[in-house]
Length: 213
Length: 420
Image (cartoon, rainbow over all chains, first blue to last red; front, side, top):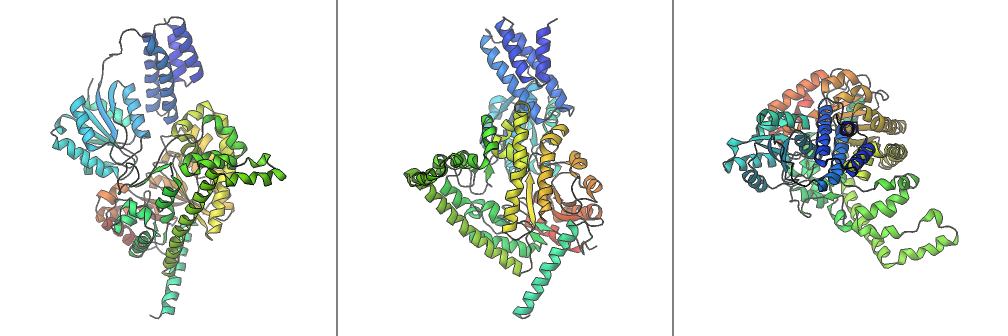
């Protein structure tokens, strides 16, 4: 029974930032195994993700959880001697905000939630040129590609990106999801994507459906 | 028709359109379904202009707006110049809060976009709350405009008094401050040029019988804190890390925001204000966060504007269906709630006796749908949301830049057939 590890996971999941960071510091200072400590952090993140999916947590909680994970990770990772991070990957997702659009709040939350759920996410950032998506797909062989966009100009950029993936002969092995404030079934059909989602939970459930464990 | 009788007919049309709009706002049945025309770059595209041209060419933009208003015949229209035509002024100021077409990486036909960043640090709450004007002048303006960096050197007047006021004049002759002041004057002259083109176009459209739907813009306190001061990440973290400071800041903003809004609407001689909201929607904040950090402060802003005789048009971006029971707490017949993806039928149920509803033909339909689909959607809205009045037809967040003209025309034409 590991009381401190459990307590740390609880504090993170309950948004007690100061307490959690302080406890993690104390644990590492007293020689606690950093790999084990990060495992408790992952447990906490799973709980945060679950509370988000259940409508108890919202964007501010995800943001704070991400900050706590980063702060504790920055303390623990230098202490890890060999790379033991190669835990099982659920699947690979290439994700980015399409060309011309500079918005990233939604995309970042999707990245965060997919990572919590064990996916390897290649986040290409904002205003991503069509060619960059195609190159990244060739390089990383993802099962899923996520195209994000907040503005209506993104509809055409999404359509062109899907077209370019098809022209490069890469379409049949991947699923494409689009997301953003204004997408719907009409735009899914317009862009040629396989599905659309309005929030990060929908992105996670699409990826889980498309990439069975 | 003689010139005189044309003017009389236009004036009668103006009155009729205004009455139609006010009937809807005050929750009465108008003669027919009113419409408002609101868009950013659609009018430019409709006239074959790029986004960049719309931001830089005041006269061509005015011609494009005139054409759109005359073709669509809405019952009121929202200004476009004030929300897009500031390219030359931003160049003069070396403006940093926006990325715009033809500037840095964006191509000429992409709309301008706001850069989400921290413009006030978490250590600066007290400073802002104690002296917002001083903070804006000494710190904020230098951060958002490169040419205004020397304003940070202006005297701290609350502590500079009596003969020190006279001595402080030397600041204004320092080379870099002088350059900043000269830049301010040039930027001011550029805005005057834009304003004069806009005012002339307003008058021309008024003479053709078209009223304005907005005489100023206002904000929700949390949006100001999150969008313009702390940045989205800073604001979200502050809900935990600096909760009391955030609440104090918003208390201050609750007084400051309506003061500015009332002043701009009164100066323009109007009675309506546009308030686009960014952080109120479902999914962003929890219900508890919404009723702690967003709604109470915003409700006070609304009440202050309403008390001053101003009708707010509140654009609730995204889906706000779960907020309806909370946000209905405003005086009846004084507010317009403009919805994007909120369930319009639930909105009607919740708000029918308090708030006029505006919206919400989806952007996707106007861009990728057909005129028939648009007409069917509008018919459903009119039949259910329009029942008994209290409804204004508009697109979800205004006409999207890429909307097909035939779809937009179908929407405005259809409304004319929706007679009560």
